Length: 212
Image (cartoon, rainbow, N blue to C red; front, side, top):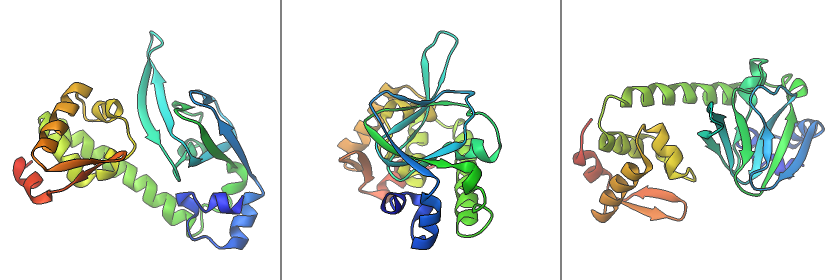
């Protein structure tokens, strides 16, 4: 279990003694593709850490259609904010691929979160999420191309693993529009596709392409 915890961002470079304590209230579970992890409004004692696989957080509209909200991958954690707030999960979660996940008992883990390094890491994570949400809210007044360029320059991690239809939703555009913009930038040698990520090859040209 200790070796599995080491793969999670929240537990990087934590001493063995502390990881051993935490591992005593952790469970490992494997999920099949499209298997539900939890539903919206459920309340339970765990938050989750991904050893491998991709997890989709989603909402459901009145017609029962899935509305993608966020995606998590290897080393990420999810479900922690709901536990900190002592509230039910506000979204549902399912495995988009075969996944292995650590279920961490929050009632026992919360004894650690007020002390470093966990307190610092959690504050940093929450602050990062707030800043990103603020920046994306400001982006809505710009055109589609400007939103894509700004995201490539300032939030390149969003182009790693995340499916285009989810990123397009975040950027408030259709997947076709996003694909068209990325294809244009690729054809001009500004970006390239590297495995599951998009890499900026010419940052100066990207900055000059359109200035926000």
